[in-house]
Length: 242
Image (cartoon, rainbow, N blue to C red; front, side, top):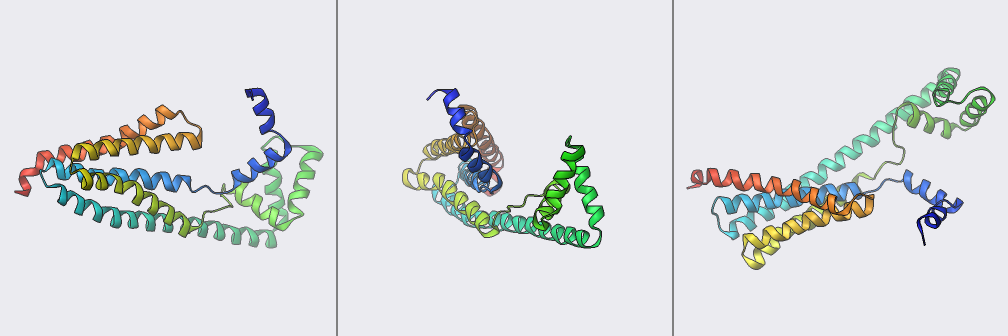
């Protein structure tokens, strides 16, 4: 199928409806990518720091595993609380708009009119849009939340967002530790971590439509830089541990 045929297939009525519905649903991809990158960065930073300070691989594994569990849980809780707070903001603004619609409906209709006037609608078309929106209370409320306040209606579930972050953090963060335990080699742990960084970037590019090589190398560079800083600082301060 050539590009033109693919575009036509992507713009059939059913395809358009499916794409629009998918666009309004929250994706937990961002939670997973954030958790995976942070898990890999912080865990390998500990491994690199332990190696730079001259500690044994056993010490690096112990501290690294403690970090995976504690920092992963902390990040998951933070994400959970953040998502929960965002949902509370939406509910608070919904209650405020409900009160405004009940108290000053004419003023709220004027706001809807101004919102769509600013989009370029006017005359009878604008009148029809205002009538259609304000004829349905739920549609009216949703319009005020999205258009006036810029809020997202389909909010993620706090528990699911937190769990996605934690699992991604755990799975990615264990890679440098498992390789270090298996091979007892900082070099092989570093190679496995580099591959993990690159893979995360590739997956992100595949799912979000970015350039695969660029995203992979960018993620590798960011994660590798953090590990390099940890290794350098540990090397310079290792005498303090003696």
